[in-house]
Image (tube, rainbow over all chains, first blue to last red):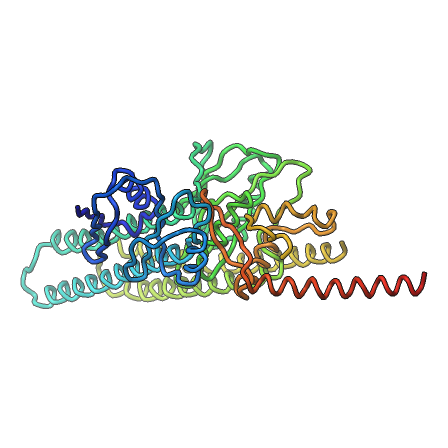
Length: 370
Length: 88
């Protein structure tokens, strides 16, 4: 019997459950074809053994065999293992890294495709204009390219969300399902994270606990304990172990992001009066990461400010040259505002950085005295 | 290293603070830092359990290193005993 599962390698948990069901029904896995995404089964005795799918993990193979796992199928870097009542499983680190890699790869692929399409369309537009004849109608020139550009963007947003969901499922990290009592609009909260953390602490004092972060807003509920501690971790690359460890320690995962230059994640922990505050990172590590994050974000902001300032400057010069659609001056003014706003955020960010570092220093001195 | 006499979760390690009669109180960050350092050095290995919680287990290299560390401390202890007897 052959069965196809297109996305099996991204839904590892589901695939394992599915294989378990097949085994229980008496279908034993014989072969896996990675290209056609097809699983081949052989009819045999039903069994209650559990499947585990492992990726690129030769180091732990010996220990796993000792514990009682036996290899059913090996395909490329994948190992399908089976065992009755297993107690010890290999870690999911490599699988997590794989999903991360694919998210990044897919993102780059769409971005490059997106640029090619835009360049192609721009040339088409230019060509059409320079011919001087009444070419394609305006609607076609504007609407079709925009819809062609929107489609990959939508696919990308969907795919990134899908990957993120599967990533968290892989680590067995639960998201908060509760309803938000208030939603606060906070544009650009992920730029200046120190300021965001201070704001979260203030909200906790006022009685609100963050449960969800979206692009432009933060959702809160009434706090569940006397204190809510927040930690923002900056990591150059995402790390399955760190996420799982934090979750084991009672920290709630609220948000995480991984891009080419850096990754960050936000965690919270409810604490009653009298309980000791828990740290997620040693202070020494924290200083370096703060600096890294502040420098990277500043550079990004400088780039944004500079490019917007440039467009604003050229736009103002162009305005004296003659008639144009009313929309252009509006766009240029917006560019100018973004440029100024960016500079203000950078200044604020460095001020916050200074405050945070001195707070950390005080804390370190206190700890040294104990 | 002692606390990994049997494979344990991160949380289990943290609860073992009572080991030192409360002398050492470790934050999660410190424990994580130590564990990942030991993993890089090959002293421990990381698995997970039925609930997909992380389990840390000592490797054979880790066991050897622990034996050696214990011998060293025993020697130190013997020296202390001898010193006490000499002065007592």
